[in-house]
Image (cartoon, rainbow, N blue to C red):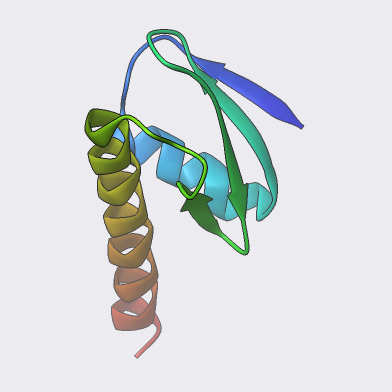
Length: 73
């Protein structure tokens, strides 16, 4: 499954990654990115700016996970 996003929206992308676990997404300004095991992969990304964007997306994924844990407890 591949989804295209017009711009970097960390929370929206994080929700997409959590729901599909493995795949590819595309941000119009930068190109395609991969995710695996519920995390955005930035091993093959050379641009420092986009590494920071992907790190922010992974942070949002962690925040979503912690929020789910807080709600269930």
